[in-house]
Amino acid sequence: MVITEGLYDALLHGLTPAPPELGGLLGGRGGVLERMALDTGADLRKDCNVYCPDIRALNRILRMWAADGITFYGVFHTHPGAPGYERLSGADTAYIQRIMRSTAAELLYFPIVMAGKKLVPYAARQQNGQISIEKTVLTIV
Image (tube, rainbow, N blue to C red):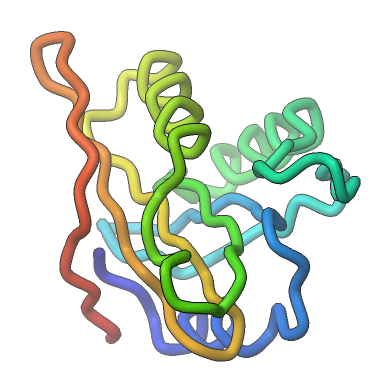
């Protein structure tokens, strides 16, 4: 996962303090993540302990990005900064699989942001109808 230093800093430090399960879109050009769109309409109820996106609003952003030549590269969401929260939950994995099945993209990124602490990059790959999700290497440019 190749990301600009500006976007990395914005994700890591610009969301502090961020409630768990806040999220948004990642986009860029030429395989480099350089833009995010925070999902301000996400459901942040305390009983919603998974990222609950505002799909209509995010689809509008994707259409605007496409018109500007920005490619959709994935979705980020926050987890608490405590040990043990660096892994994707079962709900996270199911959500990623739904996104992958709804797109022709072969590769998308789904980093977990532990605001102020670290970014844990995950990549989802789709090939021959099979979806794999695994941690990936983070490169900051």
